[in-house]
Length: 316
Image (cartoon, rainbow, N blue to C red; front, side, top):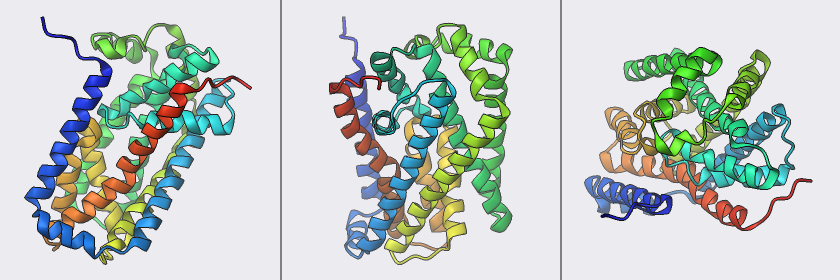
């Protein structure tokens, strides 16, 4: 009988798949030309891109603290940031569901049940999509392109369905029955406390506050992407660069693939090539923006995960 794969083995396999994809991506785009583009990169804009990514992540860490505070869970700011970044190590799971590892750490160190804190992760992912859709809607008003409109339409339908699920107990119970069939997620949906948490988080005032914080975070991400364009000497303008980027991000999210792998990169390159860029240059821009956003967050998350795993975070 074949040995059952552990979560660590699955994560390693996922990372290998991602690496294989990027190797193939670079080869297809012409590794020589891509290397040449990176040789001409302007480092000062790369630094600015990373800096705005850091701002974005810190705002999201603040969002997590606001949500925990709403549930009456008081965690010091520095330790909250450590917990948040440890969750970033699991961003490459479908819809970031692997970030539920944060609930495990909170249970271990603050004796808070997983059923109480796990809805925070789902609520964060919902607000990520909501913020992206909001920004994209504004961008399309200023700079319309039909591909972005189609993606926004599909994403908006998904958001409405998700909101009906999390804001309505009957929908939530129906959703739970479906989720319980997935072994990995089943243990995170155990009792009525799960529903009570969603009831608190979906109150109007909380929803609006978290939505505004999420938009702030993703605007910082948009700035990181814009500086990524400038690093290669391409000034598409903030609105156009943001439109292409968030159309691709939303398209990747609704594909339900881990980190939107392939869909996000492919659609982003497609938008840039259709706008006149050579494939190698478009691919270089996409690689840099992914490195300074999701992969920067993931690598930082792995570092934080290492420290959080080994230390005992005592409640203060």
